[in-house]
Image (cartoon, rainbow over all chains, first blue to last red; front, side, top):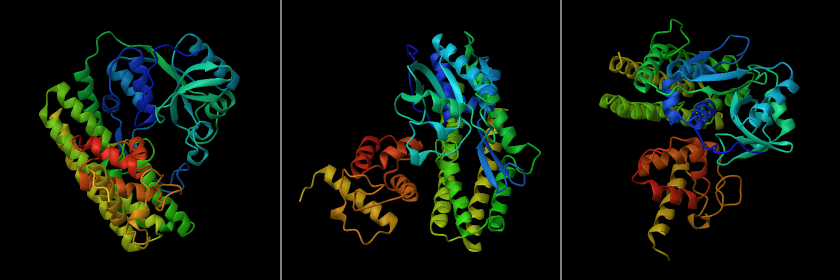
Length: 335
Length: 95
């Protein structure tokens, strides 16, 4: 049994992609960049010293789940959500939903998805994909990272949905419950942009938004103090590239996707300035991609002396300046 | 010696890769068009860092910014796939 008329699409990011596919299936034609932008997905945070982050790390988007909540609030869409302690109950609820032809998004640990080649599997507890059917012991899955519909063994899905660890999925499911007949896209876009500007410029925390990028720029030169050895340090420095480019970010730490959002928003709001800002953000994104490459290169070559880390810090500081300038201009366009 | 536009583009791409990555010990004529550039099987064996270098070189030289990493992965699979991508997208600058 497969849910009829479900259209599988590849997306840059799993969560915004799953949201977009569910909304499209419910009859709301909207692109992934618009979903990402309305949900104020673009962000930056630098984290260290918390129990969960023994080694410094950073994020380039808002926290998992926030996009869904923002979309509900700004578009008036309603999602049904479920969490489970009992795996058997969690699996039977999923079966029940798909038997009613309701495509259902699941939060899973990426590692247990048996259609992913073994060398690409890593433990990430916040991957989202959509279950659209079941045939015997296999679920039919629309995963935005893959070009076609995939099949997933029942046991693997259960393991993925009920994996332990930080941000464990707890069997989390969600699906679209209702979409309003009339949506005020213009207001939603303006609110999404305003919130993104607030998040990047005005949260009074030294590790969030542009201030977080500045902290990253300063602190990256201290990373050798926290590493066990050169191998560990090189692994962590190369991870900068993975976090910016290779975890469904749409490239350059979501900056390219946000630039595409601004381009689409420019047409909808009839504001040509947003198109100019979109192009400016593409160039800022190119700078983040240079950082990715630089980090990957020095990590690969174990060339991790103070001079190179200083250079890396200076490049990151350059992005802080550029993004502060960019978000200040953006906030004035939609005031 | 073939001189079709397709052949010229593929030679350009091979030169771009060798120059970008600073590879001097692989003769250009040994690089096969249809064999994977990653994971062995071709005269060039590249890794994920090399892939980013190639993506940025494509942007620098051909003016095409590949913003989606899923597309990027498909593009850099072989000389054939890079050539096809460049030929298809020379006008459309951001993918």
